[in-house]
Image (cartoon, rainbow, N blue to C red):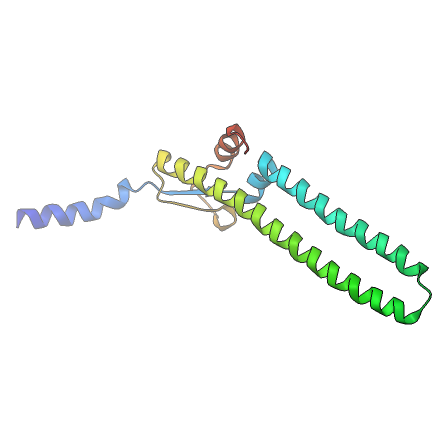
Length: 146
């Protein structure tokens, strides 16, 4: 009976010892994390290369006089453009995943250090919680970028 009473009392007091909720402003992290900024620049460069490709192909298209050759040229460019866009999307996904994995790993370390039960996006916080955004940004930027 004494053990049962201790377990019941312990059950009521456990929430008091809970670590709490932490939150992250992910957009702020991405805007201030050097790796994320570098990756975004690389993606923008590749996107600009596609735009240059289209400008070049438009100039070539304007020089073609035969309607049949124009049609064939359009089909070739459309296929090549789709291939380039698919490659860009795959590259973008890879770079976004790289950033997310690093952010998640460092955020998890901070969560454990601070004894927090969970981390959520700051958009879901109306009041309370522990903001770890700035700590996360500082730790991420102190890591070497591979």
